[in-house]
Image 1: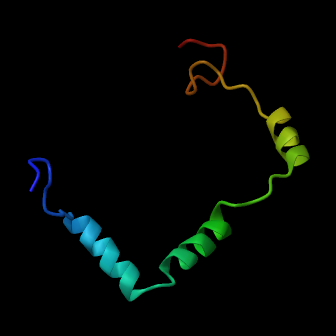
Image 2 (image 1 turned 45 degrees about the vertical axis):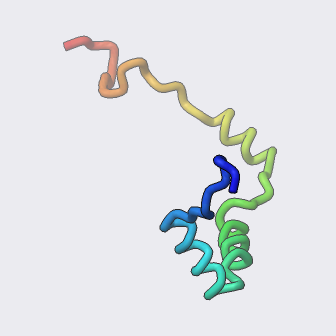
Length: 70
């Protein structure tokens, strides 16, 4: 046996995930479907450009309502 050879170690988290994937083989597909619902969207570039151009510049101090400094 080599000095560098070690028995296979698996952390508790890895063991849990391996067991979860074995118990629910469709888990990764379900995760992909959930991601597509929330994140994988086509961006409407013209709407995004309109929204960017409609932004109002923020004052340096957001709680200051006018030019008074009182």
